[in-house]
Image 1 (cartoon, rainbow over the protein chains, first blue to last red):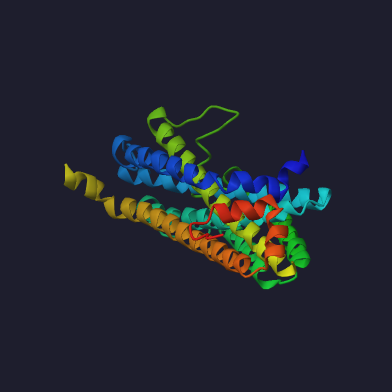
Image 2 (image 1 turned 30 degrees about the vertical axis):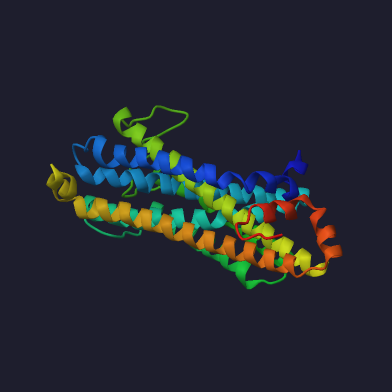
Length: 235
Length: 77
C-alpha cells in the first residue's frame, strides 16, 4: 500500500489534477460566496457581521486539519521510514499556514464589532497564535537546514511537538472560560446551527478544502521537479 | 438594494475586509506557488536540453521525466 506513495507513481496523477481542481474550486467558491454574502440570513444578535463566520471558521478548521495530517505523516515517516511523507508534509504546510493567518486576521476583524476588541489573550486565540508559530518554525526549518535528512528530522519533531497544541485548540472553549462560544457544529452530537447558515458554511469549507488541495498539488509537483533537477545533475 | 449590500447595517466594512483579506491571501499564495512551479519546470527543460543524446535517452527511461516535459508549454524536446 505504501508503494502508492512513491513519487514516480504519484506524479502522473498530481501533474494533471491541478487544472480540474482549480476549475472545481472556482465553481464551488462562486456558489459559496453568493450564499455567504447575499443569500444566507443575518443573525438576530450579530446582524450581518455573522457573515465573517463563513471565512473564519473553515480557515480555522482547515489549518487544524492540515497540521493534524502533517503530524500523522511525520509520525508515519518515523515508523515506516517513508521518504515521501516529509515531502507531502512540506507541500501541505504553506496552505495550512495561510489558513491559520486568515483565521487569526478574520477573527480579529470579527472580534471588533462582536466583542469590542481586535485582540484578546483568550485561550482559543492564543492557542491559534501558537499554532501559527509552529507553522512558521516548520516552514523556516525546511529553508534553514540544507541537509535534507536533518531538515526531515527537525520538521518531524516540530510537527509532533506542535500536535500537542491541536487538542488544546479544540477543547480550549470547554476547559476554560473564553470569549469564544462552545462549538456549534458537532459530528457526534447535535449541531446547534440552523441549516440556512450550515449549508453556506459547508460550501465554503468545501471550497477552502479544494484550494488547499490545489496548492498542495502545485507545491508537491514543484518539490518533485526540484528532486528531478538534482537527478539530472548527477547523470 | 446596492447600498444595503455594501453597508450591511454598518457591518459592511468588517465583512468586506474579512472576505477581501481571504481572497487576496488565496490569490497571493496561488501566484507564488505557480511562479515557483514554472521556475522549476523551466530549469528542468533547460537542463534537459543541455544533456548529450545518450544522457537524454537514459533520462527519458524514467516516466516522471517524460511527464514533466510533456506538461511544459515551452518544451521543445
